[in-house]
Length: 142
Image (cartoon, rainbow, N blue to C red; front, side):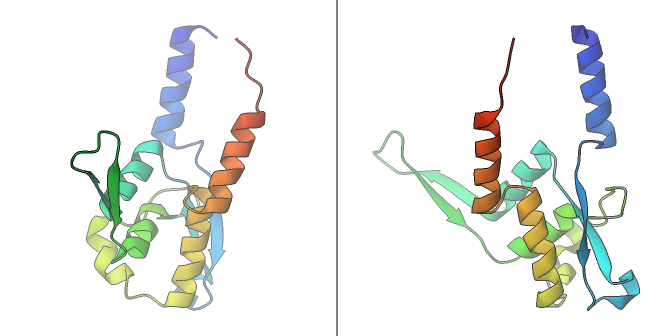
């Protein structure tokens, strides 16, 4: 493929989200949803926006390369759910406007949603380690 074909192919993947993994999550507590909901992997930008919404990074005065990170846990789970819950084709169902009421859903079902979302988006240590190991063992030839 030449440069233009590669760019076109990646643009199509990005606009259709065809590279996004979608996984069903059992939610028997929500029978109106046929006992399951779907979650998907976020895009790079979506993941960065989610992380920005739950943390604050400040530079430590007098220390050139030192940062202080503060994580805001209030609504972090509901924000992750809004950023990843989707239909079976990967179309997101919610937005930031839905975070408050999503946080009122049952803990048990929502925790399963968050566990799968965290895994798909490398937000847990195990997933981050798998990605790192997969990348370090991948061979790249130019």
